[in-house]
Length: 612
Image (cartoon, rainbow, N blue to C red):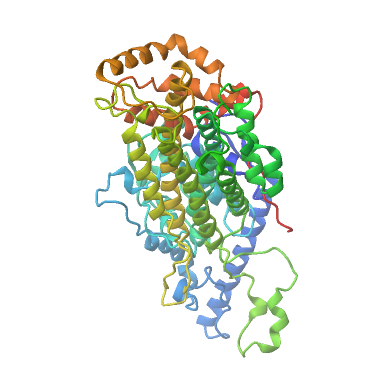
């Protein structure tokens, strides 16, 4: 099955949406831009020329004819603290193979080699392959076209190596996980295959040893030649993959947070004035303006909004545009960072096909005797450093956690008869014998509290490595892995708010409860009668009439929730229903349905621009 239009990689224009689409669906075709392939070939010719010159100079030196040959880091020298150690000419390709093998030392959650939780999910591995392939196409990494084609074949044939989740510092590139990813070329490690989007989301399939990779790859895996081992593992690529997928999903979640807030606003007959465009223009925050505009669109036509005799609502409702909007702006910042990284040359060293002298030639007068900088064609620098990714991931984790924090407060408010304007405690009939949604709020509280721990920034940490030659690292992978957990928790909290708010509007409309102080506790007989009336009022045939009195967007959200979660008329386990509702948040189907009902999309995350 064809997964829609091809994602064309050219080294410059890969977007978050294209990355997520191809990473999550193996049927999406991958194409390489011909001009980018030409750049790749030109970059490889430079590396071949460097290796050839070194071999000839090394042969002369070994024969006693001349001084030691000029070295280029990573091509003719060792790595890290061995950066000044020349390598014999006949060992240059072994050097690259050894690099992959020596760096594949990751660990997972447990010592069980078959435990899926030890390894990065398929979508993250596939996103990493896409980013690395796109980086090669910039032409600065010096790899052969055969290597790029092998990576492309891994994507097309759904090959997902087992890559342990722990072991990267997010600087010098994600060395350890990338080494595991590409060690399969050497017959080391294991992999499985995914053939559909469902398989990408599911559990790993049958594991196969890397020794049989050629059979599934459709070609002999390339053995790393000059510089190629280093090119395969340089760059904070797993970190970038994690961040890019999180940015994609956080954008969806921001829209659904507005949907949930709108439904809650209706449930409490909340105040419309707080969402007036004049208010949000006066502050000038772009995300805040957009969030308020979304809520106005969602609740337009509602019979409930402004029905309470109140001047203002609690912060979690009244200030929702400010809170959601700040998170939207943070997501936009993270998107700007990661889309630059998706199209970046993050290797070390880099090669530039130009006869122009490097900038350092302006300091030739300072060069010590015997230093031959004019002959060195590689550029050794720090594009592999994951600091931009780490900072963006930490910031995004905080922003996403705030969407969950404020949603949990709205859940608590809806369940609290002292604040929900006349709704029953925990939104349940026969209170006492039923607990209703009480423990759903506990679950939401647990998740937001866990997020507070996970939001401690990883980017402020560093630990020196490689005998202090790599003395500051970014911890980008840790930041991005934590972000993924925060996002999953936040999706669950928003699912809980949607579920609770759907029940709240049913009590308000089907039971005609005015927004006023709660009634005194009912006796046993009255409680039974109330339960009977509630069951009848929220029966499936009555739900269209309830939806008709909500705002157009809220009505569709209500219908979608009720397609998955039945009204809670007596206690039952809700875990599976929360999971299923959360899935519609993860896959975007709930947001898409609301936008289709509105006939227009909610305000998108508008990209940030810099002056470059």
